[in-house]
Amino acid sequence: MQAGAADAGLTVVVDATGAGVASLLDDATARLLEHEARGDHPTILSVPRPAYELIASIKSADLARGVPLIVLGLPLAAHDPA
Image (tube, rainbow, N blue to C red):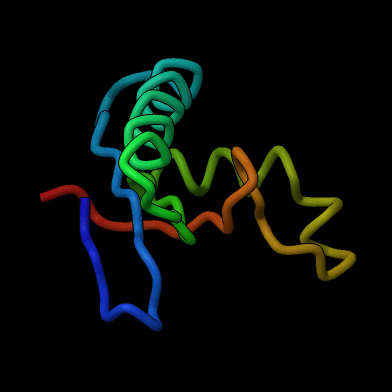
């Protein structure tokens, strides 16, 4: 999990490299609920690049219309696994 400056919001990073998207989303849901229980307000969900690309391919029609990738109510971002 990474936290930026107060005005930048909170990015929740999920690192389930090699896991399926369903497993990744289960992990993300649990982390988001933990943050919300503490009163945090996550603003971005970051997933490993391969998962991002898979989700983007599934939502390609939305992307073509200019709709951003939103997963679990948060904008989706990609990161490269460490």
